[in-house]
Image (cartoon, rainbow, N blue to C red; front, top):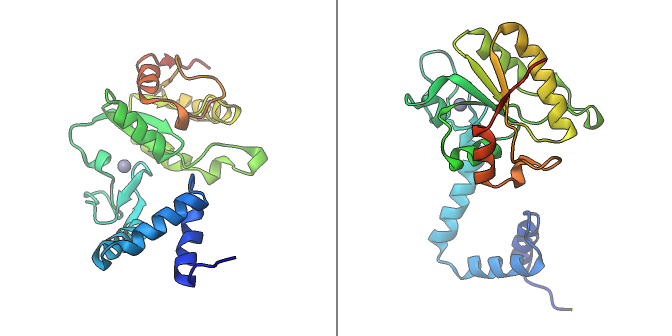
Amino acid sequence: MMHYPAPLQNVIEELKKLPGVGQRTAERLAFHLLNQPAAEVESLREALRALKERITLCRECCNFADVDGDGGSEGPGPRCAICRDPGRDRSVICVVSHPQELWKIEKSGGYQGLYHVLGGLISPLRDVHPEDLQIESLMRRLHRGSIREVILALDPTVEGEHTSLYLARQIKPLGVVITRIAQGVPIGRDLEFTDEATLSRALQGRVRVVL
Ligand SMILES: [Zn+2]
């Protein structure tokens, strides 16, 4: 069997670790890179380096933020573009499990409030507990008192339901209106796989959580 030169084989092996990339795609991409001018490959390398060096969590909402972003006057650490945007409605927080869902809601348009990214869902089976998630930072934001509504936009799965209920119980004593996205999102389906139009409708048709 013929073997590729080691540097080429190494790139193929690295690319195959990416989601959705099999042997053939990895080979095609590796040969493509090999045929590019050095400057093109360098710019890809630089972009990948910056991805890990310059992306951190927003100190307000835990969304991804650029470390070069403006920290504002209230403390250390950058804030994300959404938290910095003076045009957002600062009285509503939409709670999501991951930044991917936040971007999906943004792309769907129609939502002008702020977000809070939990970083996962409570799952005793997977050993993920409330203290492992960004729940304390959410509660700190709510305790500041300027939020009138919290929208729970978590997966309609057992873990999502469990997390929504936990959060609703924590938030209720603060007197903040708690709503959740409802219609349109298929039960048991991760929001990651829900299309933007459906998510937008689900957000519009949110219902109040009564405990
Ligand atoms: Zn933010």
